[in-house]
Amino acid sequence: EDKVVQSPLSLVVHEGDTVTLNCSYEVTNFRSLLWYKQEKKAPTFLFMLTSSGIEKKSGRLSSILDKKELFSILNITATQTGDSAVYLCAVGDYGQNFVFGPGTRLSVLP
Amino acid sequence: DGGITQSPKYLFRKEGQNVTLSCEQNLNHDAMYWYRQDPGQGLRLIYYSQIVNDFQKGDIAEGYSVSREKKESFPLTVTSAQKNPTAFYLCASSSDLRVNYGYTFGSGTRLTVV
Image 1: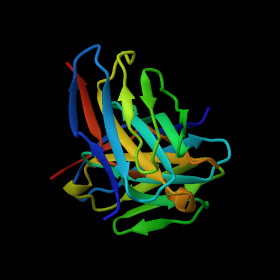
Image 2: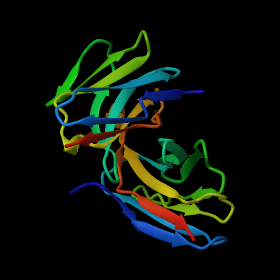
Image 3: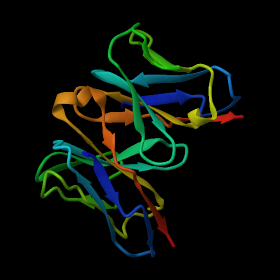
Image 4: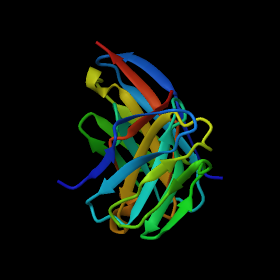
């Protein structure tokens, strides 16, 4: 059975800190790994990763995939209160379905 | 603007009642999905449909039903057989051409049983 595990489940930091969120997976016929940010309602897309070792960056956020060790990390540098959200990791196979992890709830305090 | 519209945003249901959650998309996406989200459990797949007039059960389909009579619409009915329906429900869609990029999500419906 496909499985996605995220850690930590919850994290509290102060503004300016750097955080690393982890996602490990067991998926048959891996195709891609996605990171989403969910604030109140609909998750919004952050990154899509398909190849090992290639870092994706968007402003203060970056992510990388290790297909050998079956994990990905999401880094956020110089955190701001607006980064407070649940960060979801999802892994897709060669169907059109994605398996989601439980999410990491990040709280950034001023 | 293209997107997915879910309605209503909030829904209250008495025990024993069936309720239907609406999901409409104008993205011309072939595939549509319903997920349930409970605290600390991420998203769990209820049903999905890859083409009109066809749908498959996800991991937690019991107590739910769907239909896909039009490409744009994928309503979810929460039946009285669903023992613990209070949750946040998300509808999503995806395109064959951009399937690697995952889903576009609606804003969700929060269902509460009173």
